[in-house]
Image (cartoon, rainbow, N blue to C red):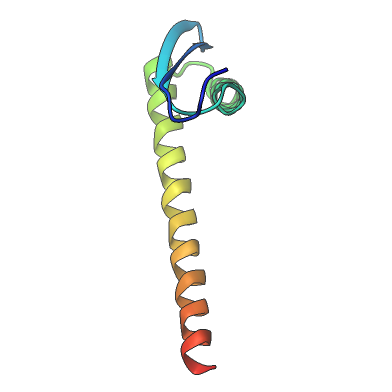
Length: 89
C-alpha cells in the first residue's frame, strides 16, 4: 500500500486527452479533481459550443485560480478575525 508521502502515478482522461499525473495526492482526490474538471469543461462547452478546447481549458484554469484566490482571502480574513478576538480576550 502506498504512503501519501510517496509519489504516485495517476492516469486521467480530461476532455478527450489522456494524461498521467505524478504527485502525493490520494487516488480518491485525483479522481474527484478529474471528475470536477470534466464536469466544468462540459458546462463551458455547453454554454459556448464554438469555444476551442484550449480556450475552454484556459477559462477553466482562470476560474479555478480566481476561486482559489477568493477562498484564500476569506481564510485570511477569518484568521485575522480570530487573531483579533484572541488578542482582546
